[in-house]
Image (cartoon, rainbow, N blue to C red; front, side, top):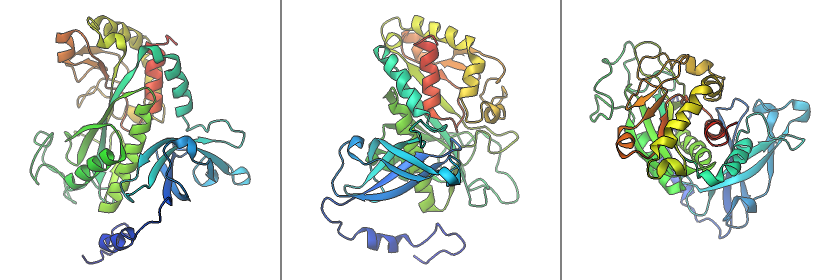
Length: 366
């Protein structure tokens, strides 16, 4: 394989494998610490060596980084603390090496503004008796490094939407190699990935994480995003979580969130689902602000009432209705138990914020 010029990410992977295949000393482990930066959307990472095989994040040392370079601190007081909170197997380095998801804390040991996990944990602890379960359908778009949709003609557009959703064939789907690599890497890491499919807009894909209980949905989804970016890096393509990457007559990208409590999953749980929808209806604007990192501004480009979305200004609910704010799946309506789907969260949402606000509204009446 020849070295590809023009793109720094497309170095010779066979050369890399020569070094990654070198024997690694026993009980010497590379731990890649991973965190969310000050944008609330982007992910950062750096690696340290530990002289044992960690089994739990609490075993790992608290670390720090330069927050002035991640939009989280001033240069005169720049150290931000990294607290390990979740541990995954590393699909890129293999062996005993780990991916370490971290919370971020300021110099005064208070959570940074982008650390939404801390308050999510508090909500989940209060609602533990409800056993809240989540599943998130993460949509994303693959781009060339020039930010043009991957596989699209450089001087035009592909044919109208219709043949691409769950499509098969090189004229219908673009970038399946990235999707398959990501799926397998998530399984190896220990993420509860439930499936994947091509989406309505060409070069747009979806994968599902869950069901996960409580804060685990945020941990698994953020780590799955990191792995997706990292896989795409190996293929020389870019992942976009923009909720409306292409203006015009093209579908946007969401993070449809499936939610249930123990009462919803029990016999005649439909009554609990309907009660939850009534509570969600009363706090529509509050949820919209929590469902994208820019308090609704990103979602305003997506939630137009077109392209399988509801209007950002109105709350609605219905059975099997993909144009509603809340969809009750038809099977749930027939079996009278199960879960609801909140279709409002944007593809670039913080899953901790989404899960927290749903639990506080539905379970805690806050």
